[in-house]
Image (tube, rainbow, N blue to C red; front, side):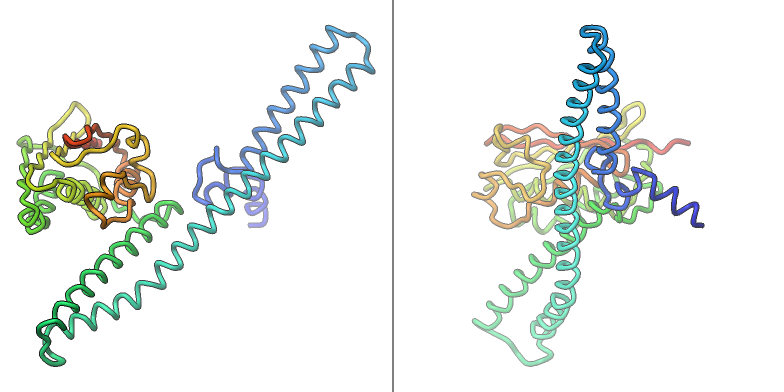
Length: 317
């Protein structure tokens, strides 16, 4: 057991897994990599200096100076990454703790609101009912934000539970469309779906895949102004299922498109037309699809609309 712990402590990738970051962001791995580079540079400097100069003392001095400079640079770079990694870890933990702490009072608040609105605690009418409805909507909005923050926290720490099984993407999408039927009608948006027949199933977690599809559908409906259409296409490619959702909404400004999958990012026209939202939906969607072996991309023209595409691997028989 002690030997196992010693071996784990010597593994430069162990802290990377613990912090839920890639090796290229992990200080221990970078320190080891830089050490190997330093050794290589020192050897190269030695052979070049020996060939060009010949005097052993001068060669030794050159090698020592180069080694000292590289070691100092290595230390500075590694320490900087350590501070960044620690700051990132603390930020993720803070989000997780705060989100968990907010869930209980929010649940209690929702329950109390439901009791008041049901009339079991007395009749509510007129202005009272109007204000209770406003409070209910804002509580729902806050609850959605807390849930998104918890998902982000789990994604960043590698603790998002995935239970992969065979899923029909077509049926799952039709279920999501039914769920957003009221919102689509209220927004004067027509949702159309064209799914190829006899589509093979994908290997995915149905709960999280549904979350990804709903995020895309929710955005497509909400960013259409006045009247419009959302078109969904699902078909098979040789080894994957291809999903496309196209809207006639406000589009994304070209200069902002590179930021679209970043956390908390919302384009300027999105803020202008739709004030609600946390800017986490597309980040969560991308991460979920990647965990399932999928890819996601988009194209958009401001004022014309946006199309998002993703693929998922087909369940092999």
